[in-house]
Image (tube, rainbow, N blue to C red; front, side):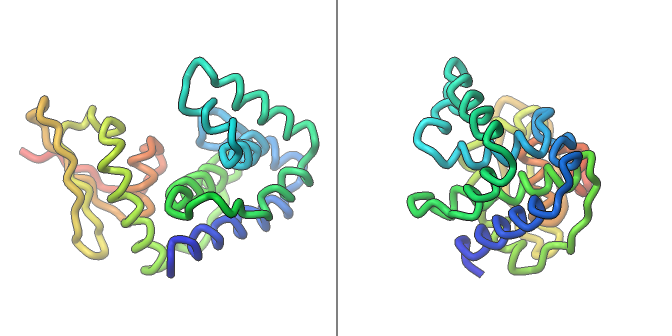
Length: 198
């Protein structure tokens, strides 16, 4: 399975999920910043535009992102789904690997409490690769834990994130997808084992 195939499968899963939702389910709270399903689905579309990402990255321009989310929501659920059905040709799959997995889980593990099949070995391999890349550029997400070792419980592979200002060591073990959720701040729902090293 390639990154592109993985992202397409996650995107298709989201589209089919949304198509089956009742209006009340669209208003259900997700794990992402207090957003409901409608907000999160619209965000996914907006972040793939030209202006939306700027509003995400630059704090003082958050209104650019938010205004486009509200504008899309005003067009209705069908409009959001139609946008999601068209994968933007200019968006590299590697940029969306972790994003789609985490956001889909945000919906599933939020107020709706929907379960889906456990990730396959191939899917976990893709997610592990994504985590390896993220751990290099977003070390700050786990800096409060000191020196961190992320351990893949299936393959025993590890990712080490050094924090030279700390003497604390934390080992976090789990499936790749669960470790990715933990890394992205969904610590309360990520199914991992945390051990403080002596």
